[in-house]
Image: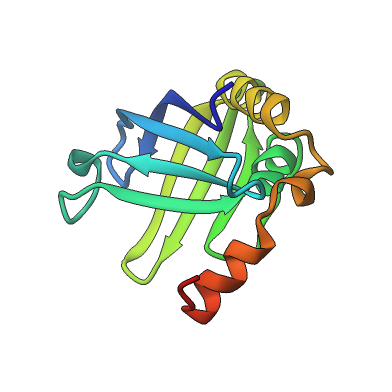
Length: 138
């Protein structure tokens, strides 16, 4: 079984204009970093025109599909009966995207098959983490 899962999701970027731009974002989960998920936006969807990646807690994404969650740079909340809003706060402003909740649930289910919720600590390589943190080569 692979230690990384990826899933393309269709996201709708909320802009100040009346229409929402549709784009494909990529969600990924790596068993080596069991507490985090990553969402990557393609260059054409960003202000700088370069790919942008956000990492945030898997638990935040899971909780935010049912109730508003998050207080920092990433916030997640349900929207209507079939969408979830992800807000990304940066110095340049706030990006809001709508994603079908069912796509997010499918991604979370796949991530939990790889690393069950509550068992993330079993997949941490603490020795490697300390080596990386301390900059030691062994």
